[in-house]
Image (cartoon, rainbow, N blue to C red; front, side, top):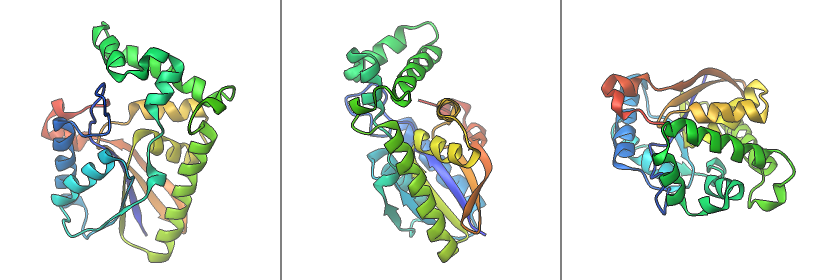
Length: 232
């Protein structure tokens, strides 16, 4: 029976011109993840990662700590939605990422403020009225992720590895879990906001059907250093 680990990437560069790069903290998170894998995985896993830089960096840094010989299959079906465009369509000034970061940093409760913006932006994106304004609409993104999960499960049901590890993003993982649990878009993206950097969401494959075993495991990060734990 195959166990699938869905991994959110390490902390990226929020507010920078290019978000798609791990911060120094994110690099350390990825190494801690790899060290944890070295303790819990008994053999080299099948590995797939999205094509985004933060996915590839997280995969390579983690695997260097546990299974440096493992090959990474790259598949852009596991890429995140364009969150910067989703923010910008909700509030045009956020087309400049540093302005969003400035607004958040000035607020008395930065995480609560960003959560409010995120909820509004996601509600607009998933609501149905504005699908035509996005490069990738919510229905297309949802279908892409669900198809990627289905194809992976069918592949693993045939090849039967003991472990599979998928390096991806919070939105992707939330949609995968939402599909398994039959969640609404609102509840799906409530999960997205809670998924920590380099956390593990674990699935068990029964036949070719995934079952949720755990969501957002991140205590292995806190055990090393509570200050390493991030959600943004």
